[in-house]
Length: 217
Image (cartoon, rainbow, N blue to C red; front, side):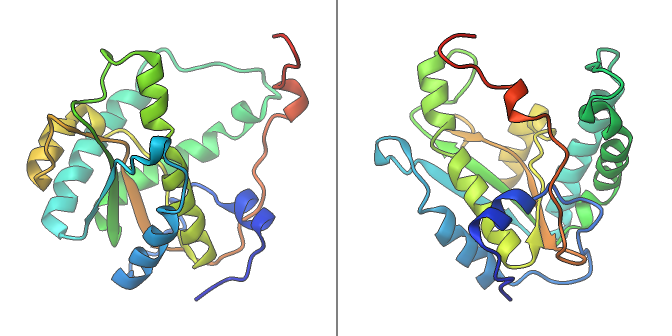
């Protein structure tokens, strides 16, 4: 199914979807592969195409990954150093709704039809020992493709959310899925499902005029 959205509609209504993930409807492999083929048209530094994509549908493996995610989620959300913004800041006013949504995902993550882990393949791991240039080049070669994948999902009535809280257990997940840990870095964990309804709206954001700098900071 294609929604027929124009480019601006896809770009402005691709949301992080959690509560509206349809846990009962299967996701066809051919739809995933179609979205991936679109994603692979994204820019990649020096045409390296150093990306690999792991899709998980096995219930037992999904449960193990979701349990890692959940334990790390609990520690992360209970930390004392939560960022603070002004009372009228949209990041403050939307926080209760976003936290409620994220807690829901934490509880049902193991039930999503498909999990996706995009990976960066290289000569070694992408860790803190890599200088800024190398970090930016590597992430800049995977982020556009992942975002394109999410946009392709949106146009086909599916949704996802970019999460990273399984990564404290990246080694354990690598062992579980046979990912070569020494040369492959996991970039995130994405639930994939059809959405309950397809009417997503623009998010409340700070205006660009508050965030832009011209010629100097």
